[in-house]
Amino acid sequence: MTEPGTAAGPGAVDAPGPVIETRGLTKRYGAGRPAVDGLDLAVPAGSVFGFLGPNGSGKTTTIRMLMGLIEPTSGTARVLGRAMPGAARSVLPQVGALIEGPALYGFLSGRDNLLRFDSADPTADPRTRRARVGQALDRVGLAAAAGRRARAYSLGMKQRLGLAAALLRPRRLLVLDEPTNGLDPQGMREIRTLVRELAADGTTVFLSSHLLDEIEQVCTHAAVMAAGRLIVQGPVAELAAGARGRLAVTTPDPGEAVRVLTGLGVLGVAADGDRVSADAPAAGVELADLSAALVRAGVRLRSFGVERASLEDAFVALTGEGFDVAD
Image 1 (cartoon, rainbow, N blue to C red):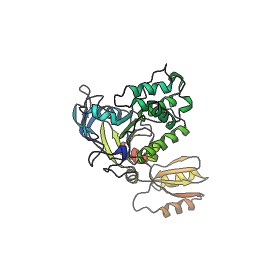
Image 2 (image 1 turned 120 degrees about the horizontal axis):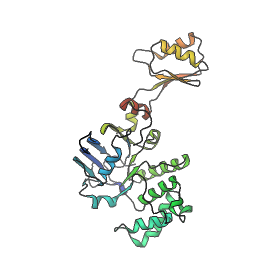
Image 3 (image 1 turned 120 degrees about the vertical axis):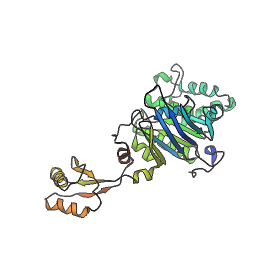
Image 4 (image 1 turned 45 degrees about the vertical axis):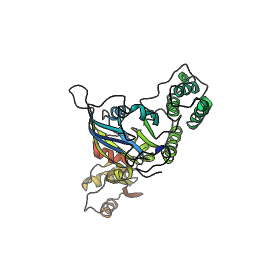
C-alpha cells in the first residue's frame, strides 16, 4: 500500500496531499441545524478511509457534496486536488462511486446494464467494452448470473452489480456507501478482500458504513461524525487505542462476580451468560486486587483481564451512541 501523499498507479495524485479535502464544508437546509457543519476532512492517498456516524450525522450529505450532486452552503471541497462541484466534469471520470444503492434497469441483464453504463461514458473505449464488463462481473462474483435480468437479482447481487459498474475502469478514487448492504457473510468477506486489493493497487477507497467491525477490519483511517460535525479522524489503530479497554471475566459464578465488582466501585458491570464485562479500572486500581477480591468471595475464574479497546468502544466513547449508526 502506498504511503499517504505518494503516487502509485491509478491512486496517484498530481501533487502530495489529500485525495479528498474539505475546509469548513457546510450544508444547511432551511433555518434548522446544518446537516453538515464546518467539516474539515482529509483523506490520505492510498488509504481505505472509513466514514462513520449515527443517524442524521451528515455522512450521505457529505458524500453528495463531494460528488458534486449538491452544492455546499459554505466552505470548500476538493477531490483529487480539484474544487467541487466546479471540476466535476474532469474529476468524476476518475472516480468510481456506489451511493445509496445502484440505479439499475430491471428489464436488462446484469451484463447489459454494465454495457449501457459503460457506453454512457464518453471517455470509455468501445473496443474493449465487452472485455472490461466481463472482467468487472468476474471480479465481484457475478459472472455466472450475468445473463439474468437485474429485477431478479437479490439485494446483495444488486450491490455487487453496482460495485462492478464502479470498477469498469481503473479509478483513482472509489467512493462506497454501505457496499456490503444485503450481502451474506461470505459476500461481505469477498468485498472486503476486493477493497484491500484495490487499495494495494493504489486506489484510494472512501467507505461509508454502519458496520464498525467492517471498518476496523478493512480501513486504515477513519472519521467519526455526529450531529453534522466531525468528532475525530485519524488512523484506525490510533482511534481504537485512544479508548479504554474493557475488563472481561469468564466465570461460572457471574452473579457473584457482578456483586463483588459493583461493590468495589467498578463501573459498567454487566453479565452475559458466563461472561462479565465492565469498564476498565480507574488509574490506581490494580487488576491483581480485583482478581484477589473475586477469589476471596469464592468466584471461580476461568479468565480475567482487560481486553484491547475496539473501534466500537472508541465510537461509543466519542459520541455516546450505541452500535446502530446507520444513516
